[in-house]
Image (cartoon, rainbow, N blue to C red; front, side, top):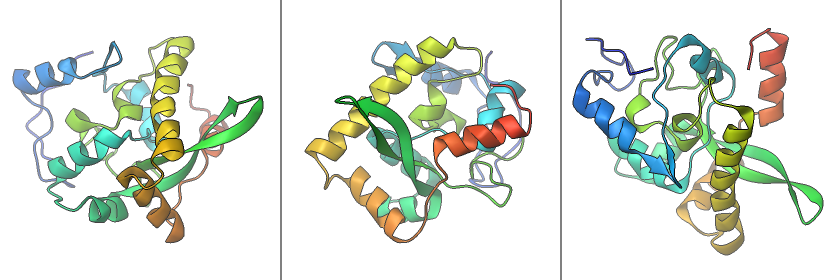
Length: 195
């Protein structure tokens, strides 16, 4: 589903929502390991914005921070992100977590970039939002997510002093932590939202 046109402005960024063909073309051009980003912003896809905001890849940090007008990524992280314990995966025959950065939550518990109707940063949405929607097959979503998580796991293993890891550690140390993804999914199920 294409991005709907609107003349509304985001209350958060004071920038217009995606409104023209140029932005839509840019959205469609974003590709990750052969997968095109999704552009759907229907009600079903917005359910995740209310319960389980998508995780960021390292390249999302600069893209979103620049869009929001930040020049310092640590400041951007402190004001807009949370340290998530991350997904549970099996590595070497045992369960472990891949720690991720996720958008902070507003007072309703929703993604801070979701205004109740649309994503205010849709054109630069984090990887965990941009490449997933409610219309995908679960197996396809899992395969794309696994590729993203491999990148982050590689950072923690090979570059634990990377900016991504530094921001996660800073947020965690400050107590700025997201609930675990499985807690978010359980809350979604309790409130009878389909996913």
